[in-house]
Amino acid sequence: MKYFSERIINLNENMKLTEEQMEIINSSGDIRINAVAGSGKTTTVIEYAKARPLSSRILYLAFNRTVKNEAEKKFKAQGLHNVQIETAHSLAYGHIVKKQGYKVRAHGYKSHDITELLKLRISGEKHGEYIAANHILKFISYFCNSTVKKVSELNYKQTVSEREALSFVTKHYSYIEHQTRLMLFKMNNSETEITHDFYLKKFQLSDPKLDFDYILFDEGQDASAVMLDIFLKQNAVKVIAGDTHQQIYGWRHAVNSLEKADFKTYSLTRSFRFGQDIADLAVSVLKWKNHLAEHKNVHITGEKKSGDEDVCKEKAILGRTNLGLLIKAIETVSEENRNIRLYFEGNINSYTYADEGASLYDVLHLYNGRRKLIRDNFIKQMKDIKDLQAYSEKTEDMQLSMLIEIVKKYGNDLPIILKRIKELHVSDDEKDTAEIIFSTIHRCKGMEYDDVRIVDDFMTEDKIIKCTEDPEKAGINLSKLNEEINLLYVAITRARKKITIPENLIPKNFNESPDITVYKSEFKNNKEKFRESKIPFEKPDFNEIPSEFKIIKPINRRKSFEKSRK
Image (cartoon, rainbow, N blue to C red):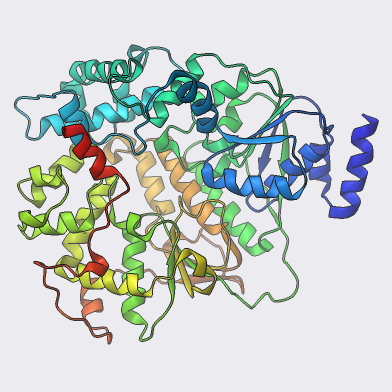
C-alpha cells in the first residue's frame, strides 16, 4: 500500500485531481463509478490503472471499437504497456472464432437472407415470410444478448410493443421460435456463417476465465446482460464505470450494468465540460423520471472554464432521429444563401439507409412506381408504398418507417436536396473546418461541442406524462420512457459553452441564461420552404441518376446476398 500512496501523491500534485477522483484511485476491491457527463471518467480510470503496480495484468473493456481506439491512444500516451485493451466482442473473437475456425458474416443477415436460408413459408399473410424473418433475427439477437442457455427460457413477445407486430408474433410464435432455434443450430454447426452476437454468446456459455489482476469495464450502463455475465464471473478486481442516465441502447438489449453490479459505489459529480446553468438544465430534465417512479435526485456541479466563453468554434445540431436531423439539414441548406461547410458524424450515407439495407432512393422509386430502378431485392417484393408501410408496422422497423415518412414529405425533391447536402459535406480529415456538425444522439455519444442546437424531435415532459397514464395504449413501456429522457440528457450534456433548445423541451419554470437560449417550436411545411429558397436547383432525371448521388451500397451487403443465392 505504500507503493500506491506514493504514486497517488505524485498524481495529485501533477494533475490536480478532485477528492472524488482520489477516493476512486485509492480504493480497493470491486467498485463501480457512477460519473456524470464530462466528469473525467475515462481519465480517472486511466489514473486508477497508473496507481496499480506495474507488474499488474490489467484488462480495459471498451464499449465499442471507436472507444477502444481512443483508449489505446490514451493508455499508450501514459506509458501503460501492462494494460490490454479489448471490446467484449474482440475477446470473444479470439477465443471462439480463431480457435474453432468459424466464418463470420461481417454485416449480419437480412430478412431476405433468412427467408431463403430457412425456406420460410407463411400462408395467409402478405409478405408473411419476410415479417417472420425479421422477428427471427430479433429473437436471435435477444437470445444472444441474454444470459439464458436455451431459447425456450425467453418470451420474445415481451420485447414487442406495437399492436400490429404483437398480433403477428402471437399468431406465429411457435413457428418463429422453432426457426430461431434452427438458425442457431445451423450457425453452431458451421452450416452457415455466424454473427458477431452469436460468437459473443458462445463465449459466455463457455464460462471463460480471463487471466488478469484487474478488469476495468467502461461505459457499463450500455452493456448487455451477456457482457455483464462474463465480467462478473472473473476472479480479478473489477471496476465498472459509466453514467446510469446515459443508457440509450435498450433497443440493443443494454441492461444498465451499473445498477446490477453490487459493488461499493463511488461518484463523480463535477463536470469539467460545462457551467452550472447547463448542469442545472440537465438535472431538471432528469427530474422528469419522477413521473415514471420515485427518482433519486442527481447533483451536478458545473465548472465554467475561464477565458473565451463567448467564442464557439464548434457548432452542432443534434437530433433524436435520422428523420429529424435530415429535415433540419434540409432547412439549413435552404435558409443559408451561401456555401456552408457541413459534417455528419458517422458515414453521411448511413443516414439514408435502413438497417435492412434499403436506401432512401429505393423507397422513392417504389413511391413513384419505378420498379426497374429499385436495387434492394426486398423492396422489389413490395407492391407499393402502402405495402411497405404495412410491413414496417408489423416488424416495428422504425428506420424503414423513417425513410417512408421522408419520401412522403419531400417526394421527388429528395435527390436534388441530398445532392446539395453532399456537395457541402466535408471529409473526416476536414471535420475541424465544418461550420455545422450534424449528429444523432447515438452517433455523438462521448463527443462534445462548444455550441449545441437541439432539434425539436425529442419526447416532451407532457408526452411522457400522457404515456404514463396509459402505457398500453401509448405502445411504450416505462423503460423506454426512461431511455427517452436519457436521450435528451445526453443531448444537453454534449454542450461545452452554449445550448439552444426548443421551448417545449425546456423544463417548467426554468429560466433562460447567457448559456441557454430557448427557441419557439415551429411546424412548417419544409418542402415548400425548400422550394422557396434562393439556391438554384435543376429538376432531376430519375431515369439516369447522376453519379455523385447514386446509391452507395453498404459494404458487402449486396455481395453477401448474391453469394447466399449461389
